[in-house]
Length: 258
Length: 67
Image (tube, rainbow over the protein chains, first blue to last red):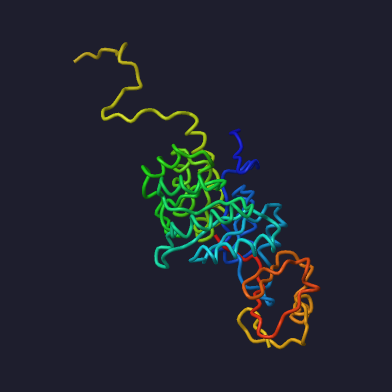
């Protein structure tokens, strides 16, 4: 058993956070929540559709997990702050996964807007978990602004390209005084394991699970990947070396006749 | 006339947010709903008193699937 993840004083047993986007059926989402072991699952805030059949909130309540609202789709600090406040009013939580996007094609964060929104929401009493670039300086600025965690991307949202810049992610982890949650880019279980081996505290994953051929199997695989990565990080991997180092003894070799 | 989630909508004079929701068949007691009027969040506790003036732009939001 590994130690629990603590964010803003709250203990979480699972180090995998699940995004609910991309599931084509609510039952698949429910099954993936169970298979992933996640306790926090993200939701987006959108206009109410009175004709909608079933709600993600029903699934979340039914599976006994908690909704973490995001500000997905916001391109300005102003809109992100408003969306966070709507989510607080709607869901009764002051936790928010803060996203402020700067570019439609890459969905990469807009650094100045993100920092401005983070500062305003922290001042307003929110527990802010910002989706950020894999930029160690920006991550530090967000931490200094009072964010409860930093959530650097591995690669663009939904790209499945894994961790594009391991060196930057390692720098973010080294300097972090708050949990580092790898957000975006995970394509499969090994990406999640690598994030944890590099020292991340948790992984948030949506598309890799929801858009997999078998989302439930992938939820379990990525959950296990996270666990494997935590254990491997704690176990202390061997040094990389250029040449081989035999693991069988060199002494005591039998001699064979010509 | 007001605008609800971008669509024009007729409400009586002095209609409150609670009355607006009832007219839209939205249960005001249901969890997970928030309302903004002209970009300002309308606190749930004040919905029974909060009147929606003519021309107001009302946003009614809830949680949906999202990463």
